[in-house]
View 1 (cartoon, one colour):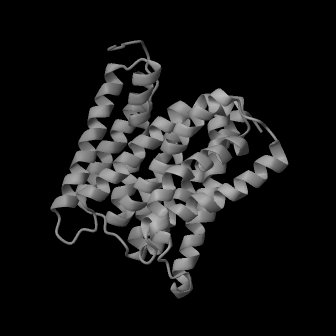
View 2 (cartoon, rainbow, N blue to C red; view 1 turned 90 degrees about the vertical axis):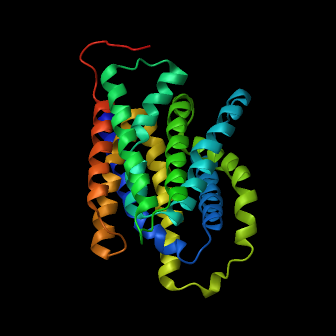
Length: 298
């Protein structure tokens, strides 16, 4: 199988799993405190990634790269997960999934800022269009009575998308130099350092034996499927592909999350959500298209 095809399969599969996670994680969050959930979501996969790295890869990391891994662990594991889980706890599944697809726009902005990649006028218009959709979405959540979405929750999801976008840009060189389980182990180890102060206080007061089976099954999905499996698939996909490819497949998440949430009755699709979603999708489409000619505005 060609490298490009394998990259598409890994990244698409990861986003399907994560699309379901918006609805399933809400079930776990109905009983489990968000930061305690993040603590288990980092510490348990960390142990498994460590075993895989030691038994399958046995690769050492250069001292200078530990600094990069430390900050990538902050962005791609700690900040990403803390803001996502807490934000999802405070907002609706559809809002969260729509805001998350702004990642390609944020990847473009950060690639332009940090890597000096060219920014065309068409892509600049895409950034503004996507931003308008996000603004409409956040405004509707704060304004609509009875909506599960809140301004704080939407902003946390936006912060999560920004941290993940910056992680995708900064982590790419590490994927070329090291094997996937080795990179993931160190990302989670350094990420755990940042998570501990938030997660431990909540985890100490969790009545694990008192949770309903549905909550525990949802917790297991979040920890083992949408974290362990998804991180492995995304790391391999990023190694085989590129940051833009990973971010583009986030398109699938709101479609699946919206479908499942509406069918199960856990969220409602409104006209404002549709219009905001169209703006965001249009913005991402403009950002993701390859320019026909160079029209840099740098």
